[in-house]
Length: 583
Image (cartoon, rainbow, N blue to C red; front, side, top):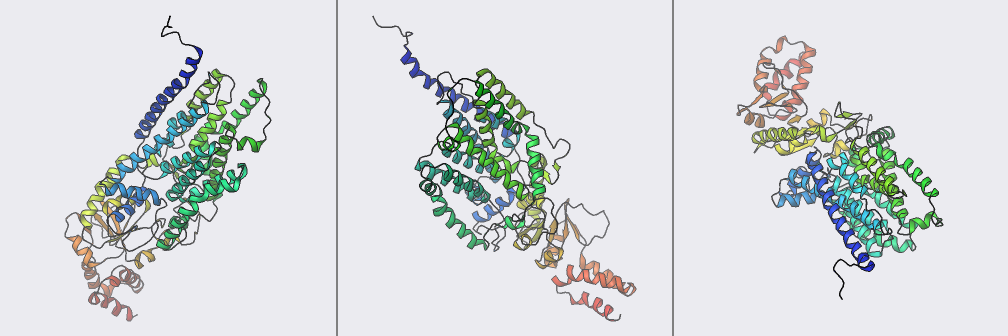
């Protein structure tokens, strides 16, 4: 008599367990990725620095080359591969803000998926009845700044995904194919962010220490760097003229800035105190396991790192976190809160999961995991009262959607006025969005030198906000024939004769050099307001004999650099020279 459909033997139940486990994994994977996408979408923003890459991408698509200004080869970006990806999107007609945001969110979801898969991979090695608990992925979903920097327009989440994927390949005892693929991922990471080389170096050191055949494993891992990254680096050095990107010099990376680095580290770990709790939790778990009956551990430290056990994954993750923290400590961190830690946040979450997995009791394991999730949600927010502290800003609060829309409107206004004019402008870093949409012929970042080699190579006089410690001098802006300087300027009072100010509708700028051909065309627009210098000089000359000599000398020095050096106007300059010769 045949058995009933419900009469399932032990073998059948055992065979069905993996399928059920896989279904649970896929369900949790979909749920966590969807939650991550929703969380990132609610925090979506775009930082000003992204618009530097956007202008490079736009000029590349328009046939000008990989330049910020036509004819000027300055590597004002540090995300070559990301800029090429943005350019490809623009070539297909995709608007860069929306494209970069969606792409970043997709890489964020992919990183969460990787963390979930790592949890599933570990759970398959447990005995029957083991708990599949994707804690690392859950912590990533709940992490505020991980979600925020899935947007932002920069390469942050792209690099985070590449690093996490390379880590996943090396966390188990890797095959030569895994090593080669991990090396290729790291090449992409370094082409998207050159300082990812610190991770490559850490991974190489780890392989040298743990490998059964270190030379063979290192050769497979580093082959893509030698064959792909080295030629790329040589090409970019030849194309742009310097061995390092311009930001390396602008931000004085070679100089240590330990005090600011410590501030950056302390602020991050004070906010995400959940990570500070991990060493103490690890000590408690170790004590609990020693009390739990089981086979005595006999493997040496190196053997535990060499095998595909949890110890190897934890050791590699910890090494990468420590190396990045040391790097941040030395260079002074960043002016964007948490951004430099984002690439290692998934690794911190993996370490947290590994520690929790070591808890012998299932019930206690779930309780501790829930506590870590709550601590991640209820973090300390250092920016509740203001969006900037000790040179560090919460970019997601600072650059709001309203700020972006205002920049779009103001940029469109300036673009209307600048169209067809060979206008040269300088701008403070906070005006990059405005300049991108205005699209002047020449634009020079003047508060950090990110797009200008002369400013970037200036010596640092005093340490201040990281990446914003070198500024263009007035003499340099004059030398480069700059017409206008855009910054956080207010419009002059109505009726006031401010010779070096111009207002485009409601957008105020400083006039650096007054060129008649440019100013005459702008004067034709009713919405553009400034003091016509030729008319002002005519009035000044009528009363020149009553001007005291010392004041006349100062005024002439100003008019000469501001106006006479840039216009053929001997008729108006002669009275100044003649009057000064009398003294």
